[in-house]
Length: 100
Image 1 (tube, rainbow, N blue to C red):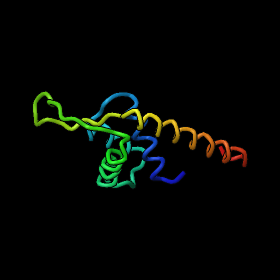
Image 2: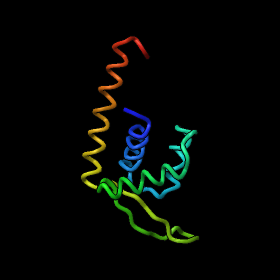
Image 3: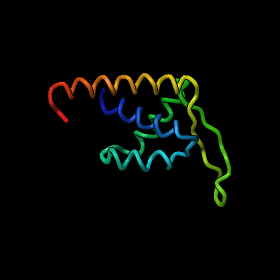
């Protein structure tokens, strides 16, 4: 599981908690992966949409321009489960070598 997969896992996990606008996913991802460019995260969001794992809609922000909100699709939930399984397998393999 490479960094891109980890970013995808974390992004989908964030969306599993409910619909979020871009900055709501950008902030925790940049905190966890500080060397990741903002543009890479937005590119990942676009790619997930093209793959059918997320969709988006516009909604009022309450004081400024409308915001683009992202949400998981049923295919996105399946992808999240696949990535969770991959993560567990990798974690277990690494742990078997005594790495904590």
